[in-house]
Structures are given as structure tokens and as C-alpha cells.
Image (cartoon, rainbow, N blue to C red):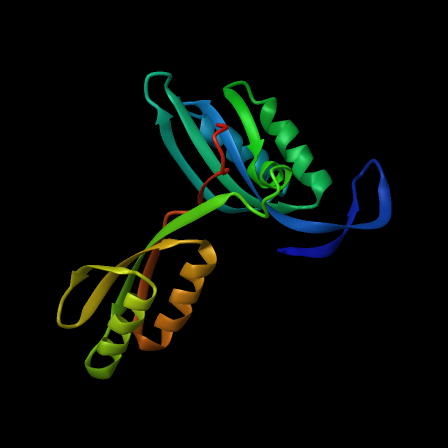
Length: 190
């Protein structure tokens, strides 16, 4: 589990108790209109909450609805406060803590995937090694010249982190990551 002890407390109830800080994935269904993303992000920045990953896309074209997926960290109380505050933003239709929902269904985490484009320079043995490792990670070569490769890799964030770590000494030049896309298992929707 991705947790550490942090002191809890607020301006109203200062407490010396500690709670686990956890990483949670939130899914937010909103109207697809100008300014909505700014309001959601403003809620986080205005209260000092960090966003570790953010993805947004229109998912229901006929209804003009977009899905925002945010990965953030906090104690259970802070995460509940974030969810409650998000629900009060006018164009927000629904907020689901996918991590909590997964646990309620007896699973550790929701299904989470990320895509990355990774540019690696390489000549000689480094080039051969980069290709070999990319194959082991099921990364696709989507661009290649005699001096570099661009790989496409999809998977859990931890898999992408591992891939980047092993490519670094081989000539890692540039990385572009999409952020986490997530949903829960099972027949039930958001």
C-alpha cells in the first residue's frame, strides 16, 4: 500500500493523532464547457492539495459530458473533504473515489493505465539493449532513425517508471506521459 503516517489537524480541530496518507484515484463527471477544469483545479490549488496525475476527455458526446481523472494523496479525512468540495461545484455531476469503490468490491485498486512516449538515443550496444528491453516491456517502436527511437508504452504507472529507469543510462532524451486513466472492475458504471 502507498501510505505513510502524517499528522492530521485543521484550523478548527488541532489534533496530535496520526492518519495514513494514501494515494487515491478520483473520477469526476462534469459538463464539457469552458472553465470547468479551471474550477476543479482551482479547488485543489486553493486549498493546497497536490495533483499527482490529471487526465480529461469528453466521454459522452451526446450529453456533452467529460470525465476528469485525478490521482491525489491525503488522509481519509482530507480525501473525503476533497470529494465533498468537488461535489459542490455546479457543473460537476458525479464524484467517485475509485480507490474506495475498489476496496468495497474486495479489490486493492481500480484498473489504472497510463501511456508514455519515450525518446531514447542510441548507437551500437546501447541501441541493441534499448530494443531488447523495450520488447521485454512490450513497448512499441513508433519512430526510429539511425540515432534514436521513440517508444510507446502502456501500463501501470509503476511499469512506466521502471521502463524509464532502465532507459536512463541507455540515452533517455525525452518523456511525455498521458496521466492515469482509471475505472473500476465489474459491470457497474461510474
